[in-house]
Structure formats: structure tokens, C-alpha cells
Length: 116
Image 1 (tube, helix red, strand yellow):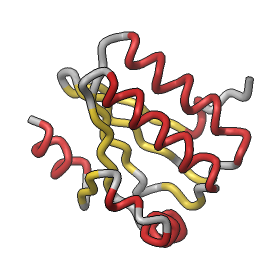
Image 2: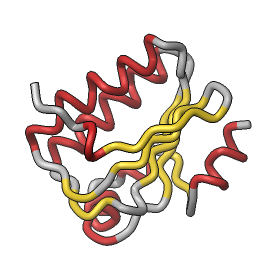
Image 3: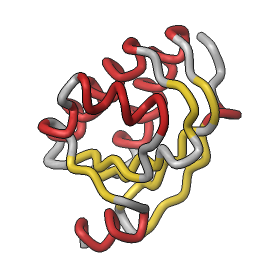
Image 4: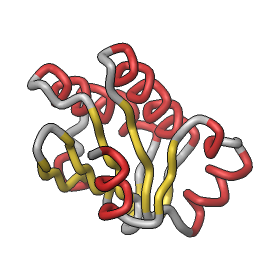
């Protein structure tokens, strides 16, 4: 399986995982991304803030992965919040009406405050 470690920065704030996705993603990143988040959930993290402020490109397969991750989080009484979205990811996000699926925030600070 593809290693996506260079495309992700992670930190933990209490029981919340803050995940910054970096640069461009491709369809091969779908499964590794799901595995990455599922591993964090197994370690007790239920809520995630996904920071897309440094994300340049997300293909539909990776958006599908984020939907799967959201489903897994909600099955474990958690959630996934999106923040900092701009550029191509924001255009796709709006066209696909993902704003009706994910809670969105301007930045990590706002998202964390909403979760606390």
C-alpha cells in the first residue's frame, strides 16, 4: 500500500485529531487515507479536524475516502470537520454539495472551539 505520511501532518488536541492534508492527492491515496484515519480511531480518537488550507488538489476518489472516514467516525460517536478549504478542493466541495455532509469552518481554531 502507498505511504501517504509525507502528505499528512497530525497532532492531537485532547481527544481530537487535527489532520493537515498537504499538497496534491491522487486516486492511489484513497485506501491509505482510510487506513490512516481508521488507525487513529482504533487509538481512541473519535473527532477529527481536517485542515485543507495547504491542499492543492483532491480527486473524487479521495473525497470518497473522506466520506468513508466520516461514516466510520460517526459509527464511533465521532465526527469529521473540514476547515481551511480553498481553490480546487473548495470548488469540488461546493459542486458535490459536501457542505451538506460535513461541518465546515474557516480555520482549525474555529473547528476545535466548536468540538469542545
